[in-house]
View 1: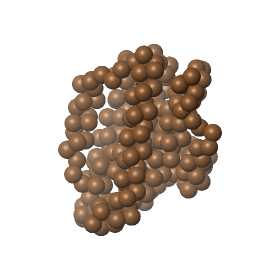
View 2: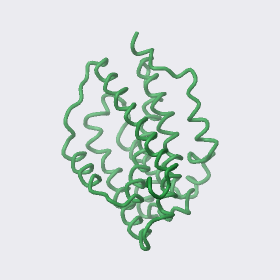
View 3: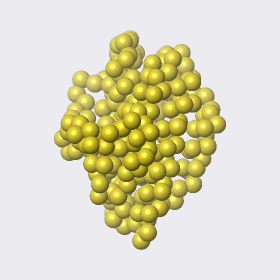
View 4: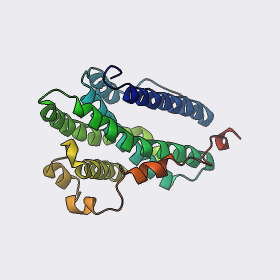
Length: 223
């Protein structure tokens, strides 16, 4: 990407740096909670193993955009249920950051599609449908481990994933991908209702709100 668009490449580098900061932040926070980093389970390991084989920029960014969407959704749901001040502080930081990353990745995907090979849209649609199903199915193994901490029931999380992914890609219809009507019906998501739900999460206004980080610090959990 640096050869095609140096400015975009610099944005991608800075974005990667922020994700690295998240990793450091969460690793330290888990230690404070008395937890630790363990090897990924079989489901997650398989998923990331397949993702690591991706070569086309548009495929990489599409899947990453979907990750960011479910990440911000999970943090938002967990924040509603959290009561411990330090946990709420951390979830607030992560929710704002991930919400900002969603519109950012929409921009990255448009840029990647602008220089993609002919026929890439068809491949992208197939990849989207497969990833959509995989992400919703991932709520099953994730609840065995995480529900004790975040208290989000699997049906609630799965429907939230389906709703937010549908909303994003139905609103950004120029990207050319969206979940099938059958998938939406299975998860009880109404296409019309989704499109009528308030301001878009990918608008410039939403990105600016998410970028307002004044007063959000990580000092609370150190006390």
